[in-house]
Image (tube, rainbow, N blue to C red; front, top):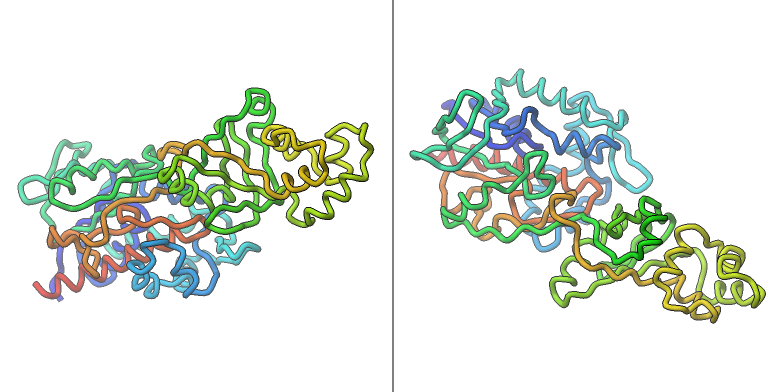
Length: 402
């Protein structure tokens, strides 16, 4: 096999996985990373315990990517959650399944896995050039700003793995969008995903409860009903339970400007039982006392009822219904720079089944540059790794034909 020169632009999980696959096949691979280090978003995600993938059934797993699920299915079938656990084990990182079904490294850190991964890439001859920022196409090649000045490279094939538009301070700033638009590549506008939302809290509530967790609740939108917890922020609400509903809330706001998250503050008790227990409290008892003794509700949950309850407190039946279905009206998503991930990106109809841009033969794409989104829980990282692998296979197939 003839050795080819392959440029991978972007040193996140998708780019590094492609580099591993291509260098393992004997190609000469150079990774160009704009930041001083690679994998910055990967490392930040691992600070509280890297959620590497999810243990649910592969068929169910593959449906978690919304409208893009069908497009991603071949890549996900070729690199399943089980395959990712084996890959991590090959790098010396043992994993375990948490109570939620999420898969974590036993060391609960991303840095040991990344160090071992980079050592493997180095052993396979991959060159990683840091502080090399792609600045667009030039003279039939790719222009980069580097510590030594501007340079132009002309590889046999290139993979773009530059990320979406969330967390731009870590390198994914979507600066590449105008350069691909100029080449007639359609790009759907980026939107925040897995994000918090603004709520018009009163000053008193915000000052007292910003940062407070709301635990052991369920939340409902048209996306379904899920258990978990969320956090009151100075701007509104955030946290894993909010992220599970983020796409629905965001799209509802886009459609008619209105959206709400309906929260059950006591999912273990029926409304009838709550109404009965509340009715037994003395009529002269304070609301705080009635909530605490009749419903076991106090602190931030009681404050939420006061903040949003619209004076349903005197009637036990109406109060019980409010406890079981408290609507939190959201105003807008938080800015995309704060979002865990982004929706939008390169339209799938402009990408062939080998992850090559139809308008630009020899240029492949992977990861969050593509128009897909997924909930938190290991789905995001898995799809980045899987599309990186799929694009590498596409590059090899395309080069074999030349």
